[in-house]
Image (cartoon, rainbow, N blue to C red; front, side, top):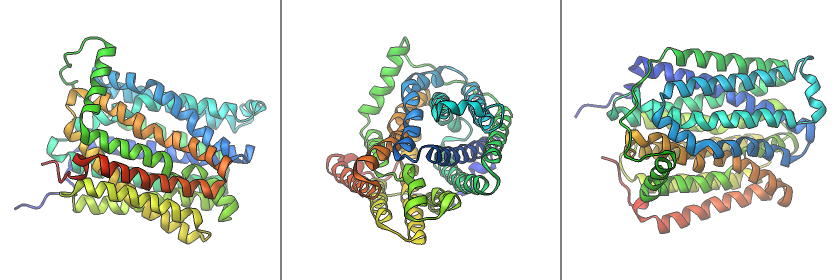
Length: 411
């Protein structure tokens, strides 16, 4: 039996351009997230204001996502990516302008200008996500889906390591303007790389007529497929309740006392674990017990959040976040492989949009939930509560989702 080539997807030139563009854009987004979070917290000193950052991005993303999924199935996906990345470039440039003398006057309205830019970028990301999800499998053969997904996760997580660390360090040592300037440059590089990928033909249209009917068909497919529904539902509630990322500025400042530079390392810690795990899975693909592995991974993530909440040692907290990233990576790869393999080509945009509502936006809604619960319960109790809820969701899913629990592989 021949050994699968772990670098097969990377040998395809267009996939390399695609993944390089995604790395640049992801680093830029992560830099922006760290700087915006720290900037807003410095202006307000209010944990709820950090949660509102997530809400400002999630609401427009949720609002447009189903329609965006429909668009990704009927419009050239490259065109959508170019337009939405261009919009992100404008948003990054606006944040940069706000830090200069000509743009500083906007802060007479407090943090509202920042929330406005984040709201607009949320619309762009709502359209970008299903287009990217649908475009990637057009760049590689079907037999390389899991390999491409794993490398996508590996390099995305590597970018997520680089972004927060670079963002925190540049903000701490060179100031906010330098950090936002690098954000703009990286988005621009990503946009240029996308231009050098050829357009791909759209798959044959589905039989449904009209926007409403096509969107309903996508929803029906997801809710009738127990494996896909179970996987994305599990991650929805786990991410919603189990995330402490929104509160990391408070942990860095008031609990661990490590400042902006320490915040950057805390933000990138989960991605360090995810890169290690993704690289391992690239060379050792998950071939059996996929369902049980997914359930244990999400439960492990919740347990890490509980331990992180009670830790008062920076290195222990950093280690727990690294381990949580390992568990999260397993979940992401299994869920993405399920969706790419089981979804017809001409429905991937709409199915991805449903996934984005469940998973992508739940990160931002989870930020809002974390901010609210931190205000009501206190920072540490709110994270403990979220971790317990995550483990509870896994228990319920394992009990009700028999098909997911018994899933071995997709062969």
